[in-house]
Image (tube, rainbow, N blue to C red; front, side, top):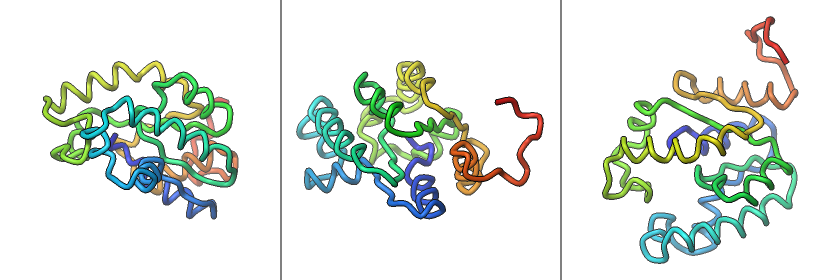
Length: 170
């Protein structure tokens, strides 16, 4: 959370002339309520089952950029689908940056009623082995959106970044 998935995804989709799909926004539309309300009223397990169904449906289409919630990869099948059907890009940032970007955490159900820093540290530690399975990992801490989009475009092999390191190994 708070690494810039939605903003980066929207900009990447625009640059590639593809449809942008925010999985959480699609879930909210399908369910008729915000993610935080789904968590509060129906629980995380219900949300994760809904997330899985929506992800499977979305991944059946081509020519799109998809932003998922950070917990989607905790499900084995979801992770498999993402790795097999897409270029899976993991976005990271330092804990201090994540805390700043997440603000009060009021709109983030996994940060409700807890020490935000400890919760983010715990989530990252739990998810680290899953995030490490991304095809590409980009630390967004010190990058602006256009720089991250450029790195993803380069990873797709569509164009080289103008200031790419010529000593980069494959």
